[in-house]
Image 1 (tube, rainbow, N blue to C red):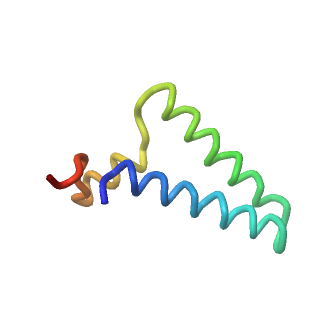
Image 2 (image 1 turned 180 degrees about the vertical axis):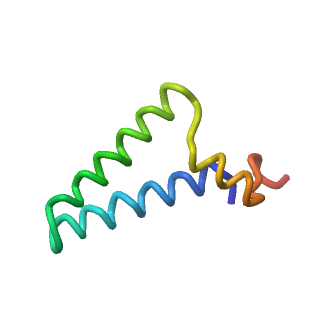
Length: 66
């Protein structure tokens, strides 16, 4: 998988997990959902994502294997 695919999977997992926790544990978990959405919005505008920096340092490739 590439960095972009990992970003989509991680963001989706964070959103679904925080929605479930907000429903069953505490509504304050919805703030985490908003935080993830804000980060996605910011990365769309600036073309920079902190998670992608972390994934690249972990050795995840940017381009799909040919």
